[in-house]
Length: 306
Length: 250
Image 1: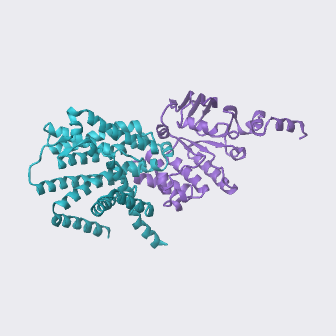
Image 2 (image 1 turned 45 degrees about the vertical axis):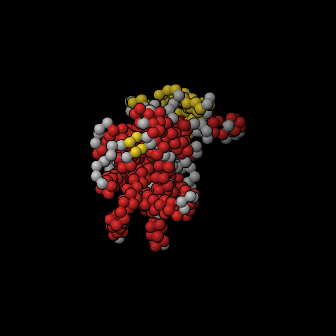
Image 3 (image 1 turned 90 degrees about the vertical axis):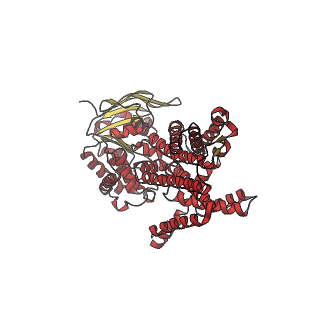
């Protein structure tokens, strides 16, 4: 039953791509990017219960690392993973320093990270172009050909992220993170090396957004600090996970799709007040489905049993 | 013979208050030590010092000859020191089985999650909560949560186990069950320290009694000797009561 549903969704997705033209290709690429960001956030925010707002920092770091490497002549396919690696190393080092903070304090430290990185990029204009932004080498091929290429790249990344998330969910790391989320002190007393596992989770929540940033930079050809170190890039993945289902494996993917659909629909029909309408819709969703869309399935099963 | 656990002139202050004051204590393998004292005597603080929850300000703690005074709590857990909490600390939304499996996986040497879950089932049967294996821990009654707490710490394959008021809040039947269980755990080769403020509970099973009062060790010896110690009675009942009962005819 489940496989049929998934296959139907995948089939519909590709049919829409074939008939939808470049607009559909663009939407699908954004969906893959959102899914990547949401799946990554879910590892630190959903499993470990640490409300990270650092996604924008990782994404921005990935875009700039990969863009700078590309402008010095490195091929795209090598620059992207290095963008992810840069974000991962940054997260590992910072994580060891700030992961002892909890709740709001951790969130605030994360917000500061995004601001600091944006300012650093602004100041070092010889390397980054500062507020003027950075142009990337133009890729070969026609418009549609390029769109398909970047969609394929972003989708591949989303699939890799999903597979990694699945491994984390099933493995020892996911188990440790769940223990930490529910009672960190008790977990440590049971022998869980919380410091190490939290840093691992934070690093994993950075590597895929970093790579997504790299692909994004190549896709749009031009980046500037306020575009890629945008705090909305930290908030959106969090909302997607809350909508889809916190700490679940597929929740972030469903949340990303729903969020993107709402974002597009609302933006089209309420051009001037779209942010307010989108906000109201999200508040309503979370109020009435506090455990996310994934809980509908579970609730129905529960009702059937009694 | 060198002791399994050696607490060597340990002190710990909190903002000027000496919660533990120059305590020395040796615990040998195979003992069941009853650690008693009135409320606020520092019993739980002493356990926290040994398990690394917070380190001693002065002194040393040695386990199997190794200095563990400043070791991280998760490292100490892996060495084989386990504890239960006075206020039970389950992972509320995880199943009973996974709660126990966590101890086996992260400190008990289980190689895989499947391995840890098998071990968890054995222990759940041992403490008679196997029928609740798949229930979330938060749905358990207090008596069963205490058993879960015990199973979790047993899953860590400890060499020494601190039981911090595992009997508090239980009725007589439940306490009898718990005491039998502690006896069986001891027979399986685990050294046990039972922390209680109700003296009667520990008297029946302890091989040695240690008394803390105002952060100081005021008695250490065979249970029947310690309970007759004047200072112990004083700590529990107050000076005036002891003097009055001495004056009264037997």
